[in-house]
Image: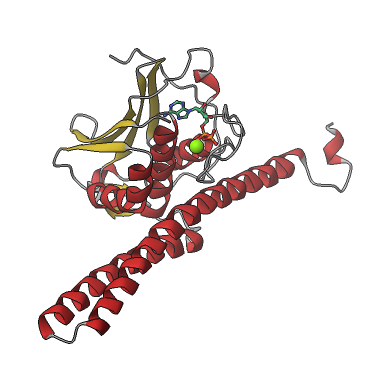
Length: 276
Ligand SMILES: Nc1ncnc2c1ncn2[C@@H]1O[C@H](COP(=O)(O)OP(=O)(O)O)[C@@H](O)[C@H]1O
Ligand SMILES: [Mg+2]
């Protein structure tokens, strides 16, 4: 008989469950920390716009200028509301509920949060969006995945570069394919099998923008994608870049998993092929 059956302490299974919960919590906090860093900068930017147009409106009494200023303030205010909503949504959301979601809109919202950061690091973003059906996902969770993939891509191009985001409909499998591809440093073949491991990082710590270095990003991405009955795949070539492709179920009624899978890490070695 196993030792555990005789003592009153937590069983091995209970201990594993607890550690998994703690890991999921660490992943969430890391993602939230990076999001707060990103959004605070974006938010500040919006506030500067509001303050400057308010000043202008106070200086100029004519209706035309004031109308223009109010319009700018209104739009900046809306942007600020979008930014805070994202943070609140992510801080609040622990549920794994999935619903039909417009991935194109989700991507646009996520890119909006990173606009300043991408400009700062001289990253140009190319979008190649096919018309795709809605995906059956938890928007907050997929947004966390996107933020991590986009920030990783940005960090792989320290001198600036190009980022390509592609959305395609895989009709045969009733899935939506979302690819985030950078033209950065790439990942050596011997490191590739480890990148999804929790706490595996080749970064010395958070960068100047306070991001990365925990090794929790991709492990979180994988856990989230697997809980969606999807797949995450990586192709990378040193010196040429890296492409991560997500496969997510469409919202077609007969395509939805009946029971949402729990978020539990499972061994899953990435597939590899050469990037052109
Ligand atoms: N786009 C990419 N290009 C090159 N290397 C990458 C890329 N994405 C991830 N990696 C590698 O995978 C490791 C793990 O990534 P991640 O789990 O997000 O942790 P972190 O970003 O905190 O290091 C990174 O440290 C890096 O070595
Ligand atoms: Mg990361």
